[in-house]
Amino acid sequence: MGLSAHAREGAPGVPGAPLFELDDVSLEIDDRTILDRVSLRVPARGITVLLGPSGAGKSMILRLLNRLEVPTRGEVRFRGEPVATLDPLALRRRVGMVFQRPAPFPGTVRDNLLVADPDVDDAALEAALGGAGLDAAFLDRSADELSGGEAQRMCLARTLVTGPEALLMDEPTSALDPDARTHLERTARRHADEGRPVVWVTHDFEQADRLADEVLVVVDGRMATDEQRERFLKEDVDG
Image 1 (tube, rainbow, N blue to C red):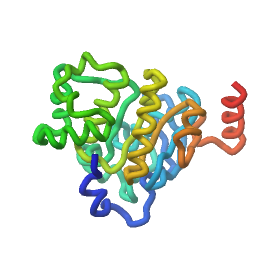
Image 2 (cartoon, rainbow, N blue to C red):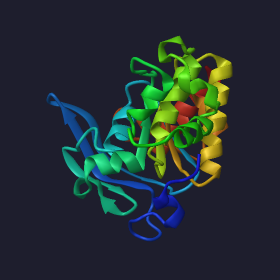
Image 3 (cartoon, rainbow, N blue to C red):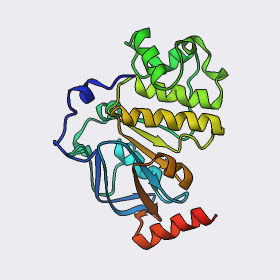
Image 4 (cartoon, one colour):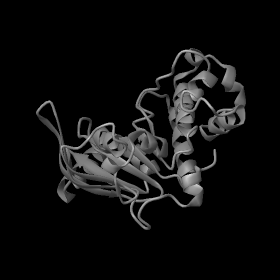
C-alpha cells in the first residue's frame, strides 16, 4: 500500500517538527484525572512504543493524538500544528487508528473497506489489503467468517484505504495468537520502514523490545521518571 499524497509530496506542517507533541497535557473524565501534565515527543519516523502497565493512560494518550479525546489542559500538536485547529475528520484520515479488538461491520470485506471511502475502486481496495498482508481474494469473503488475525488485518486495511501518513495501534495484538501477532508486528515494521511512522501501545515489554525504535514509558497517568522506568522494566524482565 503506497503512502498518501501528503506523505509522498511532503506532509503539511512545520518542517522538521516531531510527528506528535504533548505539551503539559492533562485529561480528566468524570472528575477523575486520567493523565497528569504529560509532555512528550514522538519522532516523525520509525515505531514509537508507548509502554506501561495496564491502566497507566497509554490508550488515552493515543486517543488524544487524533482527537477522540480532548485534553482538559495543555496542547497536542501533529507535525507542529495544534490538533485543536485541525478538522477532526481530516485529521483521522491522515492519522489512522487500529483498535485493540477488531470491529468488523456486517457484510463482505469489500463492504468493510468501503466504509472508509465509498468512492475507491477495487484496485485501491486490493492495495489496502496488500498493505495489511491480505490478498485480493479476501474482498468477497464474509467479514464474520474471518479469524481473529484476519479480522484485525482487515481493520488495518480499512484504515489504509485513506492513505494515512501515520498509524496508531492500540494493543492490536492482545487478542491474537502468536502467529497472527508476529504477522501484524512485521506489517507495522514494513510500514514504518517505508516511511509511515507508527505509534504502538503495549504493556508487553518483550513486544516493545521487538518493535520499538523509541520507547516512552507511562506510569499512573504520567511520563515515567528514570527511577520508575527502570523499576517497571526490571519487573517485566524479572517477571
